[in-house]
Length: 554
Ligand SMILES: Cc1ncc(C[n+]2csc(CCOP(=O)(O)OP(=O)(O)O)c2C)c(N)n1
Ligand SMILES: [Mg+2]
Image (cartoon, rainbow, N blue to C red; front, side, top):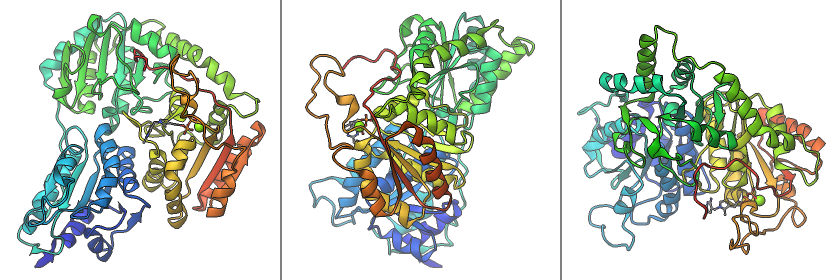
């Protein structure tokens, strides 16, 4: 049975359980998606088309693959704009599938910008479909890469979407994805170090979420009696109400990093960046690195032992070994849990205080504190923006379930929060979905807010409106910091709630601290009937939050 390439791809996506595809036109595969009944979530620019699909893969921990299409080929305008989204997905290791038109044979080399080589720098695999009958082969390979090993984007370029092939010649069967289990010898070598440690510490990365390993992490932490720190992207991998949870950042995190003698890093590449910790005095500590990617071993710090494999299988193997060696009793550590809990409370005290603040303009922490009171923390999704909302929320937001909060951004690209909130609504329609942004993030997302209305997505955008880029204020990064690029029009100059109200969102502007809770409740109520909401909180600038350990001054 002869079918065209685009139809073949659309049918395979359906076989792979893909329910919708995000897009910004034009891409030839879209015609087949429409004909084959695959709904398209049309964003208002190409970067957001990528970002929504990327966020969907992240939020579902890779159990459901986000797919997007955008313009490529000889007029790769869409691809040039989508590049920002691709770079972000690649940087953060998100298993998103991107489909675009390829440059047809006979037209290569005509433009200045080299499509293929640029795509290769931001993908786990860039596939150029040079023959129509290779559709099943390429799709199999794509989904194998998307579901196995270290996650990352896959890009397929389709130069001739209307070329035909025989669909029955190589019938497509969905790909399951494979996990690797650790070498038992490595597990046996690692466990004595953990048991003999004076102050072991678990540093958990996003690999724990992709592996669905939160339960195993909790069980091992309890058995080892070890405090747990998570990375920004893994926030929520460990229940933050647990007495062994130290935090993501802040004074108590620094204290436990300093104090540790053995660090079990799991599901993290251990790459110190702008929004992660640098392990202090790492050469004097014993680092046990549990990772799916052996090329991350000895990347930055000397690795004493590596346990290579899927985080869930590694944690399960370590737990069994610890249990066997201790007759099930684990490592005793007297009142460690109470100590950790007290240290966390102490570290958070200054923020908890401002969470109850009545000051005007409103302190942003008051908004976060009230948000935590209003939403069901076990049935909600909240995400931050680049800027103070990231730094503040990742310091204080209580995340009780995996992906109850999405931390993102090894480098953090403004505007991603809206894409994440949309993806969360698609992944979990019954969960409250909230994006918290400053004015910079809002500027990026403005054009895409129409999507919420058109698609009836009950998402709430909370704007910490403080008239400037609070992290870029005069002197914030010490003497010599450039204060010239800080101020924008603020709440005295423009009422953004009117702007977004005119667009059709339920919108409010809140200046009184006492009005925060009722305004949030009204927003969530309209969300329940599929109407998006926007609340502008007239806030002060308050660039105060927990620090990353060992980050050099810039
Ligand atoms: C695409 C992109 N360009 C530049 C930056 C650098 N950047 C990070 S935060 C920020 C300003 C944030 O200000 P605002 O949104 O007002 O938040 P506030 O910190 O005031 O709450 C900028 C320019 C970035 N993160 N992403
Ligand atoms: Mg601001």
